[in-house]
Image (cartoon, rainbow, N blue to C red):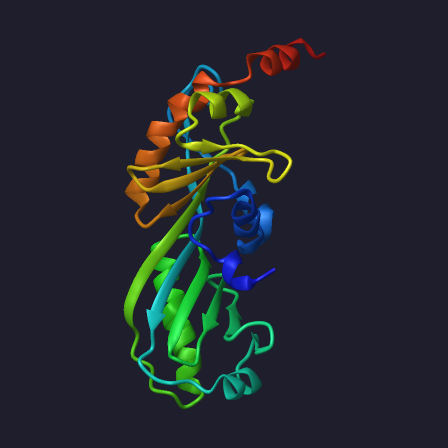
Length: 234
């Protein structure tokens, strides 16, 4: 799979959605973080909704100097470079746990952080790693391109009905991808609904706004028959 596709900011097709999930740090396992809940009641059918947790921030930064990728790969720790597969050095740090794609032009993609402050810190640490190799990086143009958030709604959802009632916004092809792809216009966010994943946001407030808008829709199309079956189990 093309790694460039794996880091696409907004998945619009089943193939892109699968590539997006596979491209997350930790892959699908990254979407199983604990959720925070609103209020004291049950967060499922009758209580308040859960709040999304950010699981990945994708940002870019410019170090304002040309880079010799072979030299970086040879001398930097936790770095790998295979130009036949991808035209960037892949460098990793443990704390905050992040990955950087470092291009010869001086552009860096920083991914894996779970907060913007950690993302900025990671960018500075990757810049410091280049400084130790003799470069004089000046970090500019830091830009968040995508925030991915995950939320466990704790109720079964009737995806077929949701898709049929919202054809202009949703796409559901379970033979290609198990989740429903819901494309929200304002804010511009794509929501993958299975264990709900929101992607495409550039600000935390956009995630919260999108979640407040989609949660009533999810409740409307909850699979009541599945809930009743679970309640009857001993």
